[in-house]
Length: 124
Image (cartoon, rainbow, N blue to C red; front, side, top):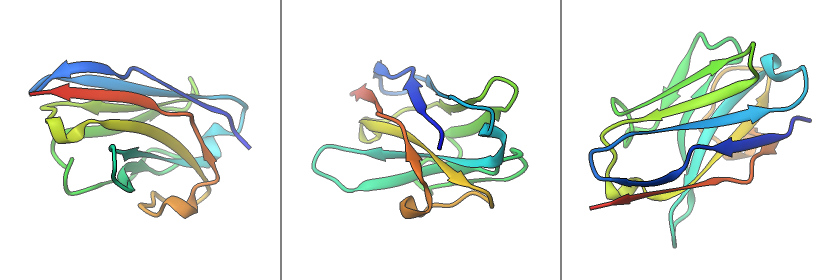
């Protein structure tokens, strides 16, 4: 099990940027594939991006491809999501999640541990 804490959310104007961080406890972070998901008001949780435990491969939702970049620093037990060219429809609570072994996955049920979420609000 790994404990996850997100940070970096906030209010930004459309076209702006934010970088989310997710810090993990424990010494096994390097063994986990990691993902970012989001839930907008009144909508289902949706996949945003994911990354292999080594960082060697990534996956993105079509809606964020080319605008968002997922990365990780295993030495710091930290996952990142760089979000550029933000749109009002990106407004949501963003969650990081940990998946034991394997590659990146867009399936929420593949992830075993979740953070508490951080709010991102994009104004028009």
